[in-house]
Image (cartoon, rainbow over the protein chains, first blue to last red):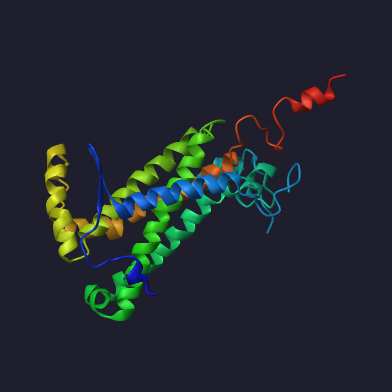
Length: 55
Length: 224
C-alpha cells in the first residue's frame, strides 16, 4: 500500500475547530507526536544509564 | 607548543592578544570546551534533543547551500532539485521538532538555574530567530504558496508597524534575510549557546547535585 493511499496529499488540508481554536490536522498531529516523544524521552531507559557518579 | 597558564603573567596581559588569550582560557578552559566525561544525570533521552536540533540545523544549512548554488530552476524542476528542496524542508521540520522538545525539557527542569540565565535567553532568541528564518523561507519559494503566505502575512506585519522597513512582499529583501542575515544570526547564537553550556556545564535535574545524588544525601550519610 502506498503512502498516498493512507494520507491524501492532493486535496485541501483538513482543519480541526474547537470554538476559537483552529488548527490543521497535520500541525495537530505534529504537536501530539512531540508530546509523545517528550514523555517517552522522560521515561524510556537510556542505554548504559545505570551507575553513580561521573561516567 | 606549550600553552600559557590560564591566569597569565603580567607581561602576557600587557598586549591585547595576551589579555584576550588569558581571558578566554580563564572563561573557557579546554577541559570544559571538550569534556570527556559528563555527569551521571546526563544519561537520559531528554538530554539528547539539543544535539539532535544542532544536527538537523547542520543539514538545513548544507541543503540550503546546495539549493542556493543551483538556483530555483534546478530545485523547482529537476528531480534531484526536488529531493534537496525536500531535504531542506524536512530538516527544518525536524530542527523545530527537536528544538521544541529540547525547550520543553529545559523549561520543566528550570535550566536557567545556577547562573545559566544567558544560556536560556540565547536559546529563546535562537527559537525566535529560527521562526523568522523559516517564515522568510516560505516567502522565497517562488511559487503560489509563497504568494499566498506573503499576501496574507503583509496585513499582520503592517499592522505591527514593522512593515514600514520589513516588507514581506519585497522578494529581494526577504531572500537576503533568509539566506544571509537570519542564518548568520542563528549560527552565531547557536555557537554562543553551546559555549555557554560548555562553560557552565549541563544543568542538573531539580534536587540533584552535580554527582547525580539527591541534594542533602551526602550530608545525611556523613552524619553520625
